[in-house]
Amino acid sequence: MSEHYLPDGMPIPVPQSDGLDKTYWEATRRGELMIQKCGDCGTWQWGPEWICHNCRSLDMTWERIEPNGVIYSWERPWHPVHPALQDHGPYIVVLVEIPHAGNVRMIGNLLGDPRQEVEIGAKVEAVFEPHDDADPAYTLVQWRLAKG
Amino acid sequence: MSERTIRGKTAIAGVGETTYYKHGQSPDSEFVLVLKAILAACEDAGIAPQEIDGFASYSNDRNEPTRLSAALGINELKYSNMNWGGGGGGVAAAIGNAAAAVACGYADCVVAFRGLAQGQFRRFGQGAPDPHVSGDAAYMSPYGVMSPLQKYAMRAMRFMHENKVDHSVLRSISMASYHHAQNNPRAVMYNRPLSEEKYDDSRWIAEPCRLFDCCQENDGAAACIIVSAEKARDLKQKPAYVLGAVQGSDHRCGAPVMNASNFPSSSFASLAPRLYEMAQVSPGDVDVVQSYENFTIGVMMAVVEHGFCAPDECNEFFQLDNLIAPGGRMPLNTSGGNLAECYMHGFGLQIEAVRQIRGESVNQVPGADVAINIAGPMVHHVSSVIMGSEATL
Image 1 (cartoon, each protein chain N blue to C red):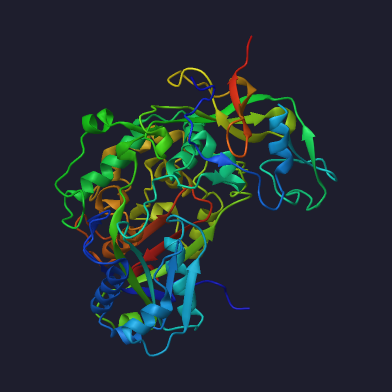
Image 2: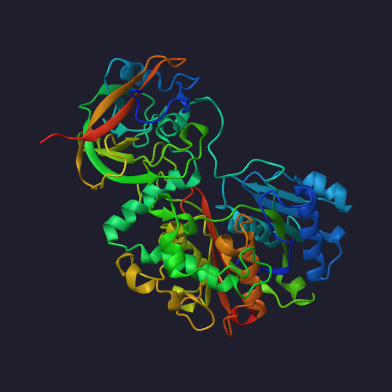
């Protein structure tokens, strides 16, 4: 039984060839969530870009953040658009807002019953899902409802 | 500086379209389809094909103006324009770019067009087959977010949550298109009506969208010819004047990983006011609305953002009776649109707007003088155009 939320054979994420998001993908391998923060004005930024959208500084740094947030939106795809998803059934994708990092949003699957009711505003915490046998190996950041 | 506007300076003088096919079923190649649509538009306008001197398209159309010019024996090519951005966000922009070229004298007779043959080329609603992904796709594809609907559904889910929108809104939008297609022999869904039960029983594609919330994918081509207002008055058809055209999106709409500043949006929030200002009309002046249905969710948000109803009025406003010609409060997608006529990346809706201004639609809105055309809601670069009759000048 796979330890992964979605079936094997899904597209494998690799860092951009220009090195922009290498830090993020390396951090996920260690079980850490790191996103961009402007070294000049302190604006949080996600997804990664070479420049701060707020002050135009090129001094973007990476900060480790507490891996939790709230569900901002969600969807439940049923129709498979990739060969690996044929006959798989529905799955849930959530857009998670990170209140302690400027309300940036991150995408992941919501672990658990794929047919569960999803509540916008629910608190979630990250689960690091390693794909050690992939070439190259990578780790996805997934989400589950926060306990308590 | 004189007033910077294209209002009333140009008109659509001719329209043409091929037979519309289910995807993969065209007997002609994509290039032949485009040629046929352009020739039909020339015939409709009453101009010789060699008089065309410019081309405008969008979404990386594969049929290059140089090849078209050579094939058509065009005397002199003076203008070509490709609007950036995928999907149908650029269809009204292509009309606007053609109008701008004519208004400022780059060219005199510009054809805006789109051709699609998906038997010959790849379909849209499938994930890319690449085993590795990077950039924005690295944060989406591994989670199963690959198709256009999967990329936009979360915008609508948030909008519906914030404004307490019922699924019946989406059903009404879909049924309006299918209703109009039953009077349109060109429509792929002609003789295939849609009932509430059939809609409700249809399968989920990606919640909040069912099968009938999603556009078709088709083969075909469509074109229209834009000339100066003066020239249009001397040609065969009643001109459909371009009153205003806008394109773009608001703050950080294309921010990676769904981080747009205004996320529960069809991307039109900042465009619509500019459009109405240029066209010198208000939503209350608009007689008929064509709004690109990639998915019904985009129509819902685009109609709101163009000022036809408030976000919290959707459940009352989007009733089927309100959306159908001839008597509805806001007749919507009167040809059947992308859902039920044909998905020609929205070009069929442009032609339908022209027909309404001419008074020639199969679902004619009586006395339609002002038509709006909303292109490609929810993509990161959208456009819309308002057309009017002689009476609006």
